[in-house]
Length: 206
Image (cartoon, rainbow, N blue to C red; front, side, top):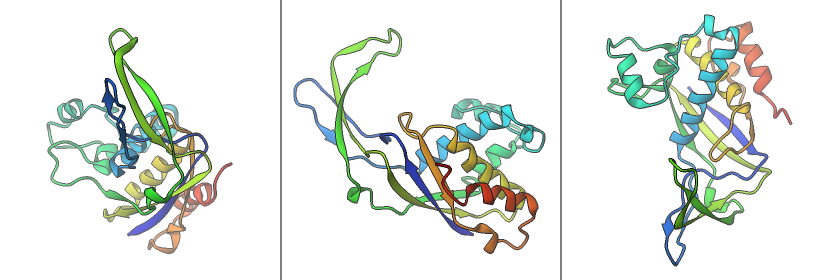
């Protein structure tokens, strides 16, 4: 089942890109990798589960690093979150994939020049300037989600993950909102819980 999601940024949006240089500062074109969106959703739902009663309905190892996820599921029995998003050495890549529909090249952009920070000292690296293309606020990005698992329990977890992303950040701490196509027209059994989740996602909050 495929359905559309629209993401609107309310602060400048930067995901990936950028390169360092000593004299001439090269500019990398901004891209929006589906893996970055998926990763943000995964992190968001992990924090959401910890803070809500949903943790009684869905299991999570609460790990982010691939080596830790692999270690937690060495017995081949993934938690619900890893079943949805995939995990290292699994036979598939989870229950869904994301395709960015919007042509990012056609969106307005401006360039920011920044300096790299040394992780250990939290001080600027000498001469390590890098530039990034950034999407200004109030732009909309359309993505398509291809959900492949015949499991409404997992579909609801996916919707909860989108809801959690609203309260999280995308890219370099960009504040976003999103809305979702009416999936109840596409599923065989849209129960009250699924309808309630969708109703909370059918329009932008702000």
